Amino acid sequence: MAVIKLGLPISKIAGSVGNHVYSSWRGESYIRSKSHNRSNPNSPAQAAVRAAAAAAARAWNADLTAEEQALWNEAAQPDGVPMPPASSLEQGSRVVIPQPGNILTGFNAFVAVQIRLLEAGIRVFGDWLKKPSPDSPNPVTDLAATPVPVSEFVITWGEPLYLPEDSKVRIWVLSEDVSVHRQIVANVDIGVKTYALADVRVAQGKTVPIRNMPGHYLVQADVISPGGNQSPPSNTVEIHVMQYFTSVIDSLDNLILDSLGNYIIVPH
Image 1: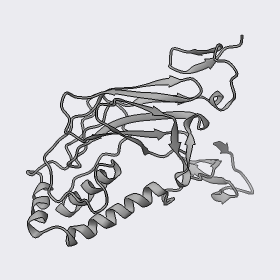
Image 2: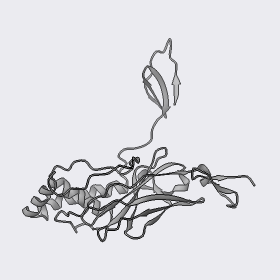
Image 3: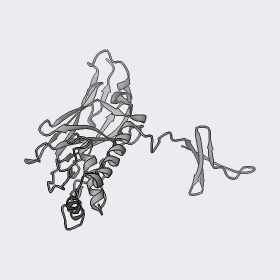
Image 4: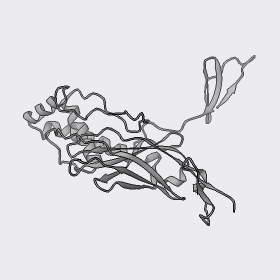
C-alpha cells in the first residue's frame, strides 16, 4: 500500500483503475492492489455443501415424520440437546474453525447436522440422521505440526479417553497472507492421530502442494460425532511455509531448523 499526497489541481481520488484501488482513510489517500479473492467462487467444495443443504431441506419434509420433526424442534431449544455444544477457547488460541451460532429451529438443526455428517464422510446422501443425538464429543488436545524438509507438515494430536465410535477428526487450515481460504483438508479416523499436510485448495477448488504456497498458516482440529455434533476446537498451531520450498535443493545437508520452527538454508 502506498500513501498519496493530493493537492491542486487534484484534491480527491477514489475508485479503481486497472489493478489498483484508490481510497482514503482518516483523511489520508492511499493506493493498494485490487483484491482478486472471490467470496463466492462456487468451488467444488462449496457446491457440495450447497447440494447437501438443498437435499437435507427436501428430506425434512419428505422423509421425516411429524414426531421426528418435533424431536429436532425440541433439541434446538436452549433446554434441549445442545446442537452442537458450546465452544471453549480457554487456551486463548486464534480461531480457524467457524463456530456455529444459536440454532433457533429444528429445521436448521437438522440441516446443519446432515451437512456435517456428509462433509465428514460419516454418512452419504439419502442416509439421513432422522433423530437428534445427545452425543457430545470432547476436543482433541496437543495439536502440533512438525515440518518435513521441502515437502509437508506432519500434524499430530492427542485424543480424549472417550470419543463416540465412528467419530472423525477434522483438520482445518487457514492462510492469512496467501490465497488459501479456510478449509477442511482431512477427515481422519479416530485412533490415527496423525496427518501429513502436503496439499491445500486454492481458487476454484484447485489442489496445489503447500510448498508452492509460501506464507503463514493457522491449523486447528475438531471432532464430528456420529450424531453430527461438533466438539470445541483444539489449540491453534501456526506454521510457516518459506519461499525456498519452491526451489530445488540438491542436498539437505545445509538445511537447519531455527528456534521458530522454520527451515533455513545455510551456505556450505
